Length: 112
Image (cartoon, rainbow, N blue to C red; front, side, top):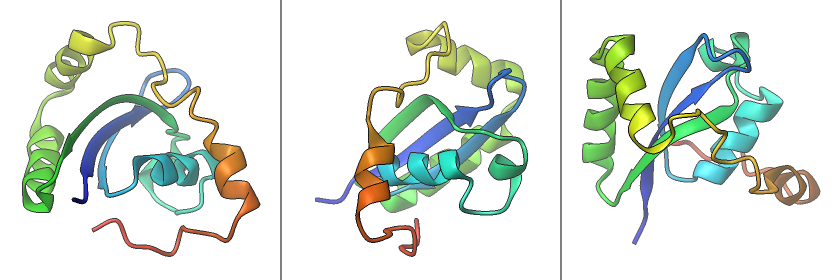
C-alpha cells in the first residue's frame, strides 16, 4: 500500500514554513536540500523537516495540506510543537544525500 506524506519544512533561521505533500518523503527532502525545483521552498532555502503526517489516502493528504496551508502561523507552530518543540530536523540522520546522489535520478516522478 502506498503512503502519502503531508510535511512542514523550514529554513535555517526558522522564519519560513513550507507545507507540501509527497509519496516519497526521503526523495522529496533530498530535492529540497539540493533545491532541484524552483519555487517558494527553494527561494527561501527551506530544507529542514520539522513535521510530517502519513496516510494511505492521497485525497486525505491533499485535503490536509490545504487545511494546514489555511491556518495562521501560530496554529501551525502549535501543531509542530506538540511532537517537535525544538524544531529539530527530523530528516537529519536519514543519509539521503548518499542514497540519491549515487543512483539514477528519481526526481522526475510527480508527487501527486
